Image 1 (cartoon, rainbow over the protein chains, first blue to last red):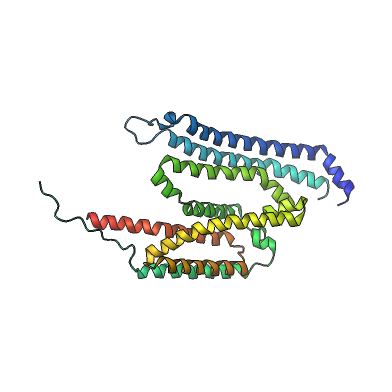
Image 2: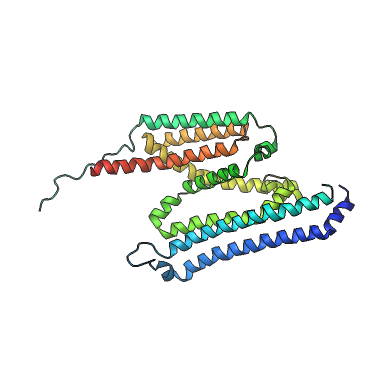
Length: 103
Length: 225
C-alpha cells in the first residue's frame, strides 16, 4: 500500500469516526472497571464496619460477600458489553471502511 | 463422667504409598504426553502455534482461557487463602479477575490489527526490536523463576504427601517431569487442539488439588464412623 493511500485512509472521516469510537469505548469501559475495583478496595480500606454487617439476623454471610461477587459479576457484564459492541458495531464498521478502500 | 480412655485413632491414607494414586499419576502423565505429541505433529507455522491457524472458535478459546485462569487460581491457592484468611482471601480473587477485562479493552484490538501474537512482538513492532525483546525476555524469565520456585515447592510437597517419598526425590521427579513436558511441548508445539490440551492440563491440576481434599474428607469420615 502506498503512502498516499495510507494518508487517504487516515484522513477519511469514516475511519476517523471508527478510531475515535474505538478509543472511547475502550477508555470508558476501562475507567468503569477501574472505578469499580478501586471503589471496592477503598470500601475495604475505609469502611470495614459497613462490609462486616450481616446480611440478615443470624446469617453468617456479611454484606462484603455479595459486593465482592458483584464486582466479579459486573466485570463479566462489562466484558459482555465490549464483545457485543465489537461483534455488532465495530467489526461492521471495519468491514465497510475496508471495502471502500479495497482492502 | 466417663472420660474417653483412648484418643480417637486417625486413619488416613495420606503419606502412605498408594498404588492407585501412582497409577493415576502415571496415566495422567502418559496421556498429556500423548496429547502433546498428537497436537504437535499438526503444527507448522507461528499462526498455528499461537492461534491454531485461526481455527479456534470463541468457545474453545474461552475454555482455554478459563482453564488457564482456574489452574492459576488453584495453583496460587485461592481456595486455601479463603479458607484460612476468610474475606482477605476473596479480595485477591477479585483483583485478578478485574485485570482481565482491562487487558482486553486496551490491547486486544491493537494485537489483532498488527497480526502479532505476543506482547513483545507488538511493542517491538514500532520500537527497536532488539532492546525491547531483550527486556521482554528478561521480564518473563524473572517472573518464571519466581513462579517456578513456588510451583516446585508446591508440587514437591504434594508428591511427597501422596506417594510418601522423601521431599528431595519428590522434587527431582517433579522437576524431571516438568522439563520433559516443556521440552516435548516446545518440540511439538500445541495445535488446533490447544484448548483441549490446556483444558486437560488444568483439569489434571485441579484433580491433583482435589485428591488430597477427597482423601482427608474420607479419612475424617472413617474416623467419625
